[in-house]
Image 1 (cartoon, rainbow over the protein chains, first blue to last red):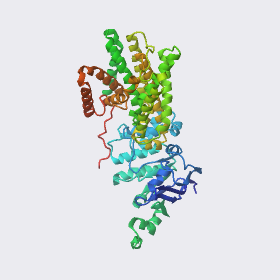
Image 2 (image 1 turned 180 degrees about the vertical axis):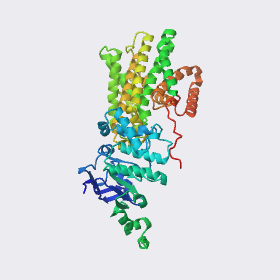
Image 3 (image 1 turned 60 degrees about the vertical axis):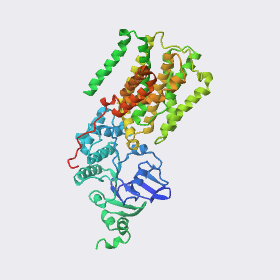
Image 4 (image 1 turned 120 degrees about the horizontal axis):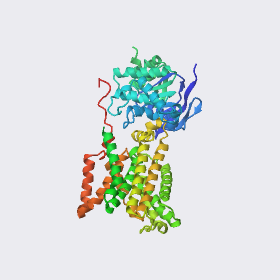
Length: 251
Length: 311
């Protein structure tokens, strides 16, 4: 059994009267792929915004490898090796693909690992190869197709050499042909022993990737377990289809 | 190709400016060119912060004032050569830029721009309030000139401009400049990449302020005078220069500075129609070359190659 790498305790974020995230306690095991499921407005992205240091929680704390990191800024969280992607791709659109991958290499964390320009170039070339975006390196990101942009964003997250990846709806807007390459690089990253949290609102996307799912609705955790357990859980079904719907499922 | 031609053009321009006093004995031309070169440094230093990071600094004059009025203070107390007060202007304005940036750069949205706008008003009021030191409305006269001849002063300014613009251009092209552009594109994503955004913005603003301060000191020595008209009247003009030239690459902004300065000078021939002609020309430029007159050299075209066949 591996150790708990990331742990949240009663994490709460209120916007005025609305508790977008309400007393969420999760334990993420090192090396697992944890899915966070929930309909729109369940608080999944807010949870990521807290974990990545963008929001301070109203209440509660979270620890990384046993250390309390509740009050760290985004750049500090990233420098510990917790890196995120966004629901709507956020690239540096005035820069080329190569430059997009270079930026994380210039952070304090990565410049300690990559001593000079030659190191960085090799690192970026290998990374681009791994993610499958080598042919686009010299192009500006603006104008690339959505599928490639998703891959570039994923590559930029990987360039930080993260231990924990937070992926916010990585497959949204992708057609079936585009899903597979991305799913593959996610699997490869996981095989190296890294931890991944994935947000999705469609359970089907999880099936092939995720080992364990936490389901959220209206800021609260309503269920957790394997994909199969979650898909049969009446509370989850109701969160998606409305009250009473669980009676009709499985019949 | 475009860049090679542009590099040749820049080298040609520098050679021309260096040889000018030898081939033409025109003191009027040398004077207005010296001033134009000062403004090209100011436009370049404005661009180095605002053009790169995308945070508009409406207060560059405040930093020019630091350098300019420092000359008055320094030369009234001891007999220092111009290079010393220019260096002191550089350092002091850099420190002031750092101190101003510390609280204001944390502001999001338009509040940084508003804060810098307020800064100019504060600086101008300080100049009036401390009239005993700054000369108030009248300014300070009788400051030591850069050199005894106009040719000498012209070369002084020219060398200063070449060095300053080259430094800003090279830093802008380095990884430092790249990080500033990433901040411009998406500040939060830059933070999430582990980059200490505030540190880079602070350094950029300090360096921009430092060069503005050095130029302020240079202008004071060039005119032998420093006053509100020299410092504060050109506040918005500097932004116009950089924008008309093209932002985000230093050199286009610097060329914009020279172009607009010369334009402002020669347009005087239009007499009463001066302002009308000037505004009309600016509007035409902004309408037809919104990215800037000279930035086409550096601009990257969006790729046609989109990557995946089934769009």
